[in-house]
Image (tube, rainbow, N blue to C red; front, top):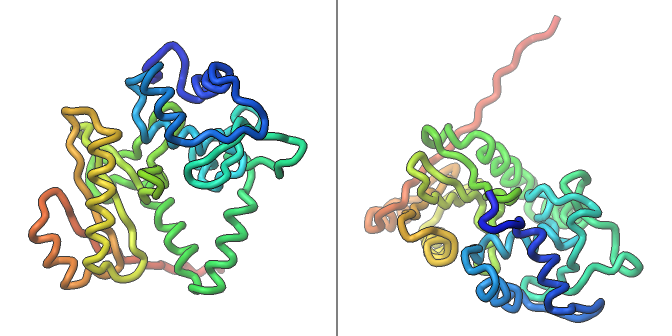
Length: 245
């Protein structure tokens, strides 16, 4: 539900007009955040960052946010913090939820050639869990707001694997490791939890974390024993074959 009379995606179009942004002119993420703080202070920073991705034609993650070709083609992302207006005369074919992102596909192929199948495996595991969060706990659901979901949710220039909401409407940050979970992932998870607490959560919302890995190392178990609000899970995969006559 929109906090104001227009959803955030449309407010970004209003911002372009309000700032008289011209083609080729660069705008930073911080400038966008500052504009919202002045005009629409209730909109959270994470929501703004996610909509910037949704409205950027070349952002590989925009297909997670139900971006529609034509309707959501506003920006071209230069890097993680800089954007300019989309120019159909010079910019490549847009990415949307309706087509396969060419840039991401190229990256996946390159990564798989270097790391084997783990890159694709992590992506598949991420999508499976995002659709089956109740396997982790009852009534756990994917965060969603104005078409933005918690799958690869932007957080301070990085991306949370899965941002979920529990039965009490508290945030749950989920990090996945397809192989072994080592203690260094704890720092990553705590950074994401703090970012959500400071930039996305309401004062009455708590934030906790979950690490899911094929195998949890003894060092990670030891580190987790000194941290409240973090749970560890190991996953198993099984295949059942049925003979077809």
